[in-house]
Amino acid sequence: MSIRPVKSRTLAQPTIEGAGVHLHRAFGFQDPTMLDPFLLFDDFRNDTPDAYRKGFPWHPHRGIETITYVLAGTVDHGDSLGNNGTLGAGDVQWMTAGSGIMHQEMPKGNAKGQMHGFQLWANLPASLKMTTPRYQDVPAAEIPEIIDDDGTRVRVIIGDFWGQKGPVEGIAADPQYLDISLAPGVRKTIPMDTYRKTFAYVFAGSGAFTDASAPRGVLLEKQVNGKEVNLRDLSGNRTLVEFDTGDSVSVQAGPEGVRFLLVSGTPIKEPVAWHGPVVMNTRAELVQAFEDLRNDTFIKRMN
Image (cartoon, rainbow, N blue to C red; front, side, top):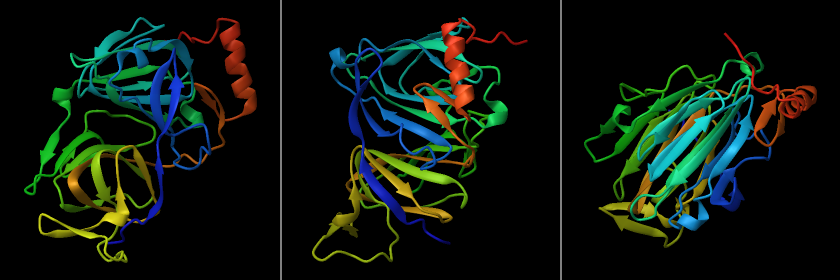
């Protein structure tokens, strides 16, 4: 078994999107090969309604898939094809924009004013850029949750894990998307496909994503439930951890435990022409997409 070493650790950066939604961006609008097939990851957790209530009014997408995972509050959505609905706490939506869609996402906080969740963008290969748009709305109750003997909890949103299969299917990137919680001091080794790009995103507590044999810092160890944790290696809230190659990921929870998303996908390895919410393979295709927007031919009516 080869443990994936940590390639980089970075903090998500504050930014404003939509009509004034304050969020934190872990990656996006940079090098599209970095985490191919994934293009962008936003953390929109916020406890101040004025910082999110204006939401994301009507806007286009083409050539990508968006994955929205809500932890608290609700998101009302609608689109140009007549689809609409509401995502609540624990729900997931996978939207395949394909040939083009206009949609809106309007967040509402819970009774405490909390609007918490994440959105991930996944690229589509050239063969599917102009596919028919579709939605997969998955309620929280349909997402399997595994509880291990040591208290580890894993929600299997997409992919196969520990004998459970996530409910979202037919995704081009063939991804795995897990929501993992570990108790203080617990260490887990999680098998991963060697050839997938993989990242973790910590959003509660802290964890050390290192092999047990990694060099230990001087005077930085702390006993947590009878186990030593190297405080130097802890990644905390809003930390993106990018991994190098290997067939497993090792993580040890810090003093407060850790909760993180673990996401992997098969690289597409195709050229990317990207502007805002439209991601194509060539500049000519990108230009055509925006001409379609101007000419009101962006939405393709397909049988």
